[in-house]
Length: 370
Image (cartoon, rainbow, N blue to C red; front, side):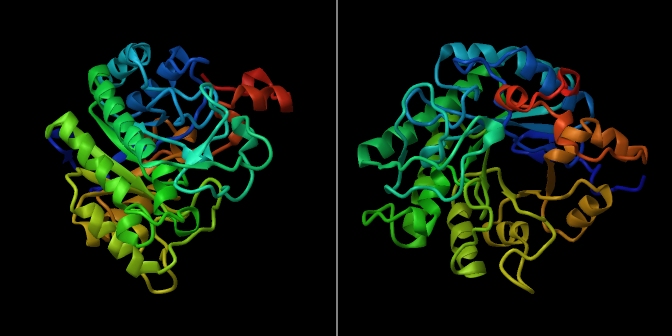
């Protein structure tokens, strides 16, 4: 098929990509109880590399053994055993021809399962909206977090740096800092979750400060030749309808601040990557990120139709396409698109379901892949 944009070669930092199709990070909660990666995860990630994706971004990985874990059975990069457990997975993904990027995620006040503590922390003592995710083992409302001290902010920054160094030791090609979906860095960015009156609260520039400081710190630690990205969104796990208060003008402030940092890319996720994000006639989130930051952009959001993904690239909304559920349904999406084959529709029961969900809903074992 004639997907010249999708199958054009490109680079992230110094690394070559054979196409513009990337696997988006997706919460899996299939790690060992202590956060070590395992054979289930190896098979999961290997399948995408075999299927022709040029790069794979991991599920969110927690960076410390304090407050960062968001879900039970989430993988970590908080210690040496975590690092060692990732090495064979990284190796097999790369051997099959794909780059592998570790997404580092601090859950903050949106945590619903932490093996190290029952307490949650956030920029301010504001309870996230909505309910915990049942299919990821949560139940009921989120806990009210404790507002972070400056010392705890410094420790969180350090944990991003240290886990990025562990990712590099494990052999990953790069790291993506999770600043989206209502997790800690996004909590600092969000007006109603951040009531601080210090240098990390109030104005947009203050609320984005922690994210830019983390980016700078990680870049200094990992060096110039290691891929470094950040993910942003308006919507959250706990508040799917959230929009930035001042719309496109606020997006301009955020992305210009992010644009001044030494990133290789910005990864944005929206309900539909080709729909205006700030009201009728405004830019898409990807366009705003690309135009205001000057960095390459990965776009995610209902791009599972190759024609639509090709259009997004042709119209210069973004530089790369990230697929989530479409990749789950079609782990060989790039190979299928290249040869004009039909795509499977996403079916939740045919993905890797969490153990708690399988038990509660008595899902047939044979429906669970990998």
